[in-house]
View 1 (cartoon, rainbow, N blue to C red):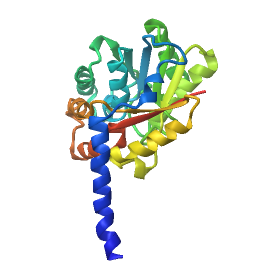
View 2 (cartoon, rainbow, N blue to C red):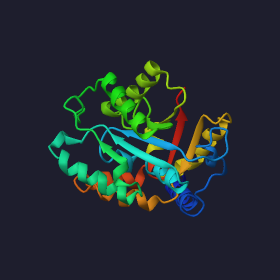
View 3 (cartoon, rainbow, N blue to C red):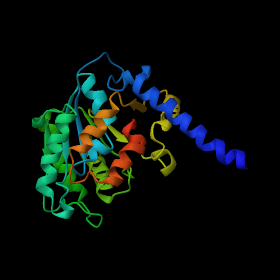
Length: 260
């Protein structure tokens, strides 16, 4: 028993180091390049990343953003609130623009919605029809052909994250936007969520099981950029979020699943 207690932490530390080396030194996964192809030869995609709050893009979606920008795709970010639960809405809007500069997303391709019915908060329920309408307007104005957003759990279970997912689903259901691909960020259990780069092996394996291309694992080709981007959200960059970004598997990889 004592032997197990001693060796288990050492084994996990070794695995963490090996996994981090994989992310930092050999981040590319051969089949990931097909994520944006949709069975065709390469073409530049107009991608809309739909989030709930300023800092969602840095805490959860950096691997996806880095992948898209590195491949030359055009990415628009639609943030559906100012994150003003603590009265810092204007500050957080500025921080989001600064974070997007760090993520190599032009400021003119970032839109922040400030709507009285879309306020940040665990007790705030967002109207799915309103969300669908706003998202549809952005799709039309930016000629979007791919959407990326949260899944039905929203990584952390935050109700605003989940409402964003259902708003996108309502748009798809009501307008039958069949010419637009929609991908959701897969939520994982708490052990995988806080296993840092170690989760890369299981994430790759699970993506490989979906040989039909409905799931892809995107490894962060520049993990340091996650920290740099999140640090721009200075009003939120407190000790537990620093710990989150260090330990979170979402810093090192994103698993995206196609919404049917």
